[in-house]
Length: 248
Length: 281
Image (tube, rainbow over all chains, first blue to last red; front, top):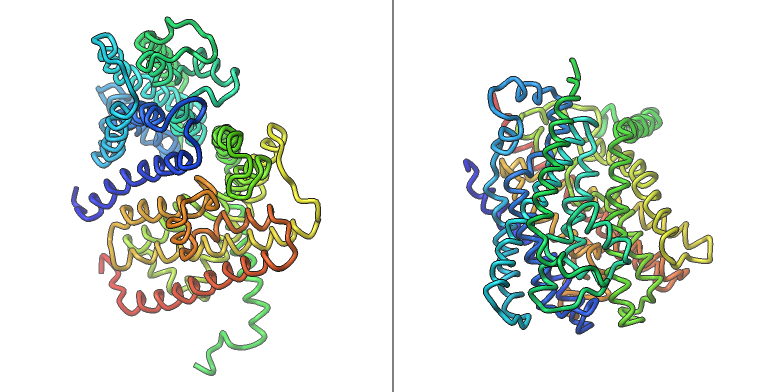
């Protein structure tokens, strides 16, 4: 927080990134009424849910991106000998408040999306929405940790992680109905990104699944989150156990 | 300085050799990290696929939106992915290095080098860009052309003109990032400005969405900014497959921006040197 002007510029910048991101979608909608069968308000809902989940996960676990560097320069070794779990150290290292900009913007878009997309509200729907925001954040956290485990072994390849975190965010900003069925199946059963927003949104909007998958999936986000977190925990432990220092 | 030793004509060949050597090192510096390159190719490809499907959904409904057919719109996606790294669309690299060296004082050594800071950095960045174009540029396009129906130009000459446009785009991209790095002489922590400029650059380059699809007001704004030189213009040069009337003015715009940015970089380096106070005494 020492460089106040830069902090302001960065927070504004973070919000701007995502604002411009949404501006692109809005421009697309200036030429069409529906994308993959969804209106602009409904896409804003998808966008906001995914943006919130990624933003919250980035705030907590975004530092796993730096693991490759830590392995290369040996500072990961120092973390392993301290009496605190390395994952906690990584999360607490350079806790970046500026990342709040992304969440704020996502919440704004989400709020507008909820208002603009004709939802027939009920108590279960409110619960599903709240559970999804938490589950979605957990799912993205799991992806960050999986990427971290991969970096501990590979010593590099932050970019592969970006494909799943930021790529996953970009993918889920659009209704999954625009993608081929294989893509939808892989983000349902392999990397459960579809549970961050797509399935719960189908439930909130009372839309039938265009791919005809069971409607039970629409309530399953917390289950997907628990499974993803468990997989990430196993991978992380395996990664740390196999870790070999660069030895320099 | 009429008798400055660097003006000796015999030294010209020596200097060309020096720049070539710097450029080669710039190339090798990145070619060393093969895993990082592969990872980058993977990421560019994943993003290309995602954006391609959103464009398919858009062009399915509006088949000639912005004057592009669907195949052209998809070609645009992959050309844009190919240009991200060569033109340095997301900043990083030279901006971070230059501003770090200013902050740490190491820039004092750079200013003592036998060739000017601007040209040294330009040569190095050209080498880096060449490497990124050959790897992270070509490989995702190859995958994209296997997965989607793309609109490739028929005439061989179009590819030649496209390469010129890419070279100019790399130069413009360097010019913008060099100025941004120099900013560190006046502002100690440039990160906030880097983030803001990067976003503006990405949006107005056409990378997110081709500028031909933008509403009129935004499009007019995009046309007076240098950023369209980075993605939109090279992509248009490839897609239009035109020999003169459309393409030459586009290349002219790129050249004008390149010259303007390099002149600004030269003048600002001079101003920075006069004001420089190396930290740490």
